[in-house]
Length: 112
Length: 115
Image (cartoon, rainbow over all chains, first blue to last red; front, side, top):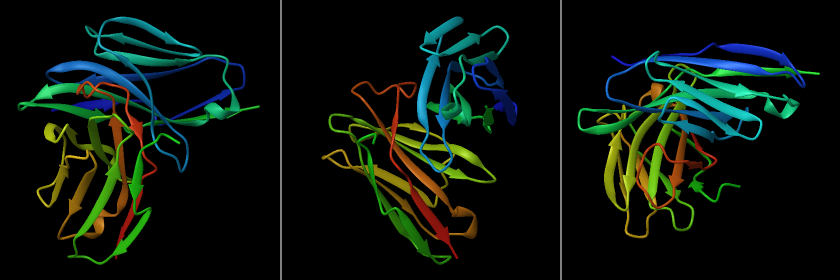
């Protein structure tokens, strides 16, 4: 089957760095995406990794290790507005279709 | 504002009924995606259409169906509704290429309540 695991909650202070891990089990793996969702809002696409390594976009970076079935989202210089839920999502090919499976989400609370 | 519109914002209906949710993608986007988000199931990908054709499929129930019309708007039809179908339904769109990994722009969602 397919499964993703990420921590349910993470707490950090403003200005700090936080890493949200995601481990997955899936067949036909294509890549790993990350989404942000504020309470009451719609998800926002953050990043996509298909190859091993680190992708940097401003304060956010995403990492993938295909051999370890593991990825993470790194948030630097945390701001209060980064308090949100963060979802990792695996893209795979199965049963003749591309599929997108989301993790349960990690709730990040940033404190002053 | 992502440029993706969804109607209605809220929908309250009874078990056994059928509803249609509507989505208009961003101007120029050919791909439309549907998602369901509920407290117990989390965020689930349902289905993707690209330029009118089905391109990717997730855990969409047989009671649910979708289509994308020539003007690229999409509708998600939910029938024989059950209490467990109560959820937030998001539509998203993405630019020209059809890859499911592409950056997607989400609409504000339709909150469905089944009583």
